[in-house]
Length: 398
Image 1 (cartoon, rainbow, N blue to C red):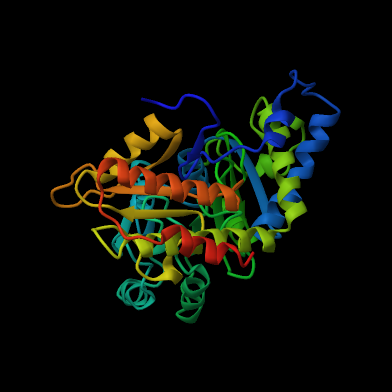
Image 2: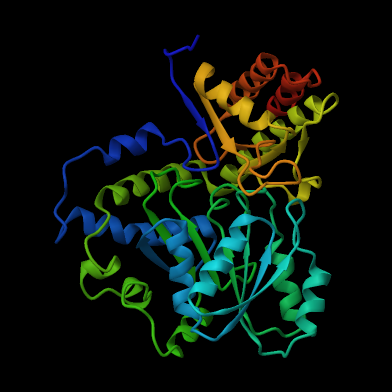
């Protein structure tokens, strides 16, 4: 039997739940793309995107998903034959590295596994073993969506400065922007990439490269930047179409304008705090479930955990079994165990991910946890009791 009535809930780590306000703002006829409201609205996005990123630099907007934004950033800071260092804490750092390799960039990878953050001393040892000017850029994820590992970007920057490393620091905030605290200027980040479909609460389709003047100067020394990825016309357009190297993503612009208004209305500090509290409630529930059976949080240290996504190990094929029951019987969709294969589980069937990013509140998290526990009972998965009580104790402090 299925339960076809009622509202479904997409609790995956992107695309996230789209607010009704955003949907209404996008539900309109095609606008004038030559003058008037659309042009003014586009210009208004940049300072508010910088507000969310705690940045005073430049923002180039692209019609692209996260993978496209990876390429956009790389195209403006490195050329074929340049060397970069990638600090990997999950599948998406490896994806960015692979893209660089296909652009004929020489890539070194420091792999820190799938359940802990970048180790600063290991990074220093690696950099000290190489010529000081070898790497043009160091790339890492703030949050890797596959593992839910969060990296301490400020500490990485501090150590790079201490050893006088001149490489640009490039950070993937696709999963974390507007969810986990991120301060581009204060943390010394040179390039940051993000997309609209997670913490920014807009349907997939546009992405962003944030960059400072140091990165901008690096681009000027490149011999060849493709006309589409070139960020310079996008930040200094002589005509409106140059913002996007062609026709604007008209309806996404209206949706993003509304989403940014919502974030500003809440205030970014409070947005970060809401995500933190909701995350702690989820962790508390999983801790109670873990008192019996094999369930565990993928990331052991709370300081290394994302406030946007939580990766959970169930073992066996229990992750897939749970997801399928939830999808078909309850109307709840949770994330797959992406990039989480292990011996005896080549497809990551023993893992799931909860997305709790963007337009999420207490009742949604409690519904998620209660429905998952119902799913455990339905598939016969052994787990401890008291999860909802533990979560509600934390959430009652809001």
